[in-house]
Every structure is written in C-alpha cells, then in structure tokens.
Length: 269
Length: 287
Image 1 (cartoon, chains in turn red, green):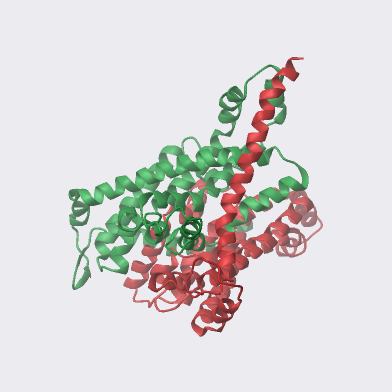
Image 2 (cartoon, rainbow over the protein chains, first blue to last red):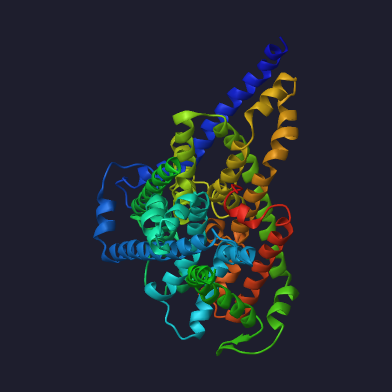
C-alpha cells in the first residue's frame, strides 16, 4: 500500500530523467552531426545554407600534400609514442606488483604529467630543450612531449590488470623450475596481451589528438591537430569540417577497438 | 632476495629515468628561469623577483588569474549539475542498453578537444546553423554577431569539452552504490530529495570530488577554447602564458606565470588530496 503510494512521484521523476537523458545525448552529438553534415556541403564558405552534397572537401584534404604529411606524421608519431609509453608503463606496472619503499612517491611522479597543466607541460620542454640547444622537431621534442603525456594514462590502464592477476599461477611455474623471463613470456604476457594492445590503442588515440603540449615544441613540423589549428587561425578553410570528421573517426575508432579488447581481457581474468 | 631487488630496480629504472629527465628536470628549470630576466636581447640567468613583482603589481594580470579561477569554479559546478542526472540514469540501466549508453557517453571523450571546440564556429558564426535558421524563418534579417566571442561562449565551450571528465567518476561511483539501499529507502517512505541528499550524495561524494578536481584543473589551464571562441573579452590565464612564448619573447615572465598556474593547481591537489588520493582522481575513483 505505502509502496504503491510512493511509486507515483517516482514515475514522474523517471519520465523527467528519460527526457533529460535524450536532451543530454542530443546536445552532446548535435554539434558533431552538424560538422559531419557540413563536411559534405558543396559551398566554399564553412557554414549554412546547405548547397548540395559533395565529397570534394575530403578529396581536396587528402590531395593536399601538406595535409597528407601532417596526417602521416600524426599516425607514425602516435604509433611510436604508444609503443614507447606502453613499454615504460608495463615495466612500471610490473614493478608495482611488489612492495617497495617510496611507492607512494613514485606513483605521484608517474601521475605528475597529468597534474601539470597542459600548457605548462609544453612550455617546460620548450625552454628545457631550447637551452640544451636542441632544435624543436617532430621526432625529438614532440615525441618526448607525447610520451610524457601518454605514460600516466598507459600506467593507469595497465596497473589494475596486472594488480588483479592471480600470482599463484606464477608461483606454481617458478616451483616447477621456470625462470623469471619464462614466466613472463609464457604465462603473464599472454594473459595480459589484450590489455597491452588496448593500452597501445588508447595511447595512440591520446597522442593523435594531442595539441596543447605539441604546439610549443613542434617547430616547423606539423601534426594533424596543429595543421587543423593553423588552418582555423589563418583562414577558415572549407576543408576543415572534412578534416574534423577524419580526426574524429580515427581517434574514436581506435578507442572503440581498445574498449572491445579491454572488455575481452576483463572477462578472461 | 638480492635478485628480486635487482629485478625491481630494472623494472623501475626506465620509466623513472624518463620522468626525471623529461618532466621533473624541465619543471625544476622552469622554476629557475622564473627568476631570470628577459629582454629584447634574450633571456639571461639572473636572480631577480621582478617577474613575480610584475605579475602581482599589475592588477590586469591578477584580475585575469581571478577571472580564470572563477571560470574554473563555475564550469566545474555546471559540469557536476549536468553530469549527475545522466550518470544516475545510465547507472540504473542494464544489459546491452547500458553498454550502448556508456559507449555513446565516452566516445566523444576520445575525440580531439580542438575539433570539439572548432565545431561551435560553424554553428554560432555569421553563416552558422543558428543564424541561418533564424534568418530563414524570418525572426532576424541580419546575422547575430554576439553569439560568438564573449565570456558566455567560453563557458559553453568548456562545459561541452570537459563535462565528460566529471560524468565518468560520478558514474563509476554510482555504480558502486547498492541498489537495495535505495529500494529500502523507498519502502520506508523516503522522498526523492531525501534519497539524493542523504544516500546518494554522501556515497558518491568521492566521485564528484575526483571529477571536480579534473574539470577544474583542465579548465584553469584552458588555452584552445578561449582562444578560438572567447575573443578579447573571453581571454584566460593560459592565453596570457602562451602569448609570452608564441607572440612575445618573454620566456622568464612566462615561466613565472607558469609557476603561478602550476602552483594554484598543486595547492588544490594538496588541499583536496586529504579527502581523495590523487591516484583516485585520475582512475575515476575506481581504486
């Protein structure tokens, strides 16, 4: 009886909540959908009205050698940064399975690149390498900036996987005479492989989108977000919506595959 | 035992050396440079407080810092209010529907904030969606110019880009709340407001705090959003710092401003770190 009476206000709340959820998702996606629509607009002014369907902005973005090289730079840099950051993070996460002194301090050090404001994270490398006499470029300063940025996230993704790992399997292998590196190669790594690959994909996505640290140390090279930025600032180029769509698709698809792999590795362990 | 130590050292060494060399050392150098002096001839080693004096003596600079902190606080509050209901809604779903909503929620999280800031230009600009729609139905006959380049739009842009950093930790902390607690409260006649204030809020407070720290941290160091959408009146502290390097050549003053910004963030983490471990902030309150 009392439950029946109480149910009435809750039903109103539930309806309100559903309306809110729909509004929320519409607001979240409407700007992205608008950009996707504009990327096919046959008009050299970025905006409305919609003057007809065309794919020429995609063709002209991909046909522009400067854009293409920025795109390739971002992809290659993302791969290298992801492999380096994931390797460093994996080693650190392995170490974190044991107890050692100053563990808390080491953890704070690992998280430092997220705590430092992004703009400061770029500037410290600009002045540091500047005074070491190193010319800013994609494969020196920018790579360092990206590994710095991605490393803590890679650690935070990998650490829970390794931490929740049942160590009795390893002990059994050691008792049976397996060496440390054999235990890692034949037991630990195969079990965490999906998580390692997922971490690399997340890391790639973070590096591919990185802007604020990169802009201070890029010199004359270009990554996709930097190229995109330059084109907004210099002139509102008609290729921008098409480029935006390509950037969104690449980073979100990589992240989606990462999620799928992560889900798989959770179910296994 | 000794081999175990060696193995541990070998595992820790690469990562720690990297972080010391490329994060801590450059940070230390930033602090040192904030006491140097810059002139048109370059930046030279010195020990002067003039960069800091210049910052604190000029009300334009201190007001900009205060304005940035205000924008940070307001953006954080707006994000919390927007995030809580949607996080709650998703946490009450189940099965494939929940999975789909979670993916939908976090997909934009993985796309560039430069792109997600840029999208407002063709929506709110002269030829933007809003102006064109209003003109085509005849409400206005000239495009509205005030839709862009003001402080209000900076809030919109920041909330749009950073709210998800609030939604994630709130969602994760709501997931941990035992639904039977709420059922029991309902059976005992608690009103929705009571349930929120006396059960949900205390239990999910760590998640709100984690998200709040993250959003505030990101907002006060914003550069892209105010630069693209803010116009002259929407400028924030990050733009002032960037200008010392990208347009001016005042590295020492820029270093002092960077130390001030990093100091504010560090202070916030030290104060709030007493309630939430910082690792919890970044793992979204999972551990």
